[in-house]
Length: 119
Image 1 (cartoon, rainbow, N blue to C red):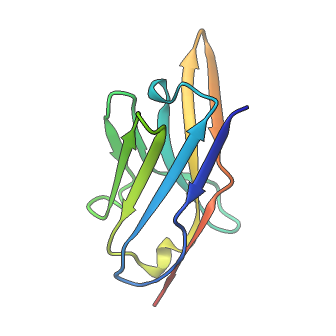
Image 2 (image 1 turned 90 degrees about the horizontal axis):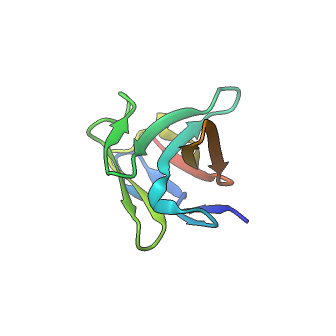
């Protein structure tokens, strides 16, 4: 059974920092592209940051220079360090795991963690 469990979402003041974590089980973590996604009410889920099995990272323009994604393959965990948080960062953050094998795409999601940034 595949599980992705996010944690770290809390209420924080604008300008503050948070670290989100996503612990996975049931997948070969080191083989998966891991990502953090955000979804505001009424909007589609969008990529915030991703990290490949080899450590290559990508960021949405809105978070470049503020957020850092990292992975710990020994602990099957991906983190998102968020700094200089803004009220616009008030959304649910989801952890996602994606892997491609034999022409098939395998995608798994966590349940989400709410981040609230007060002005």
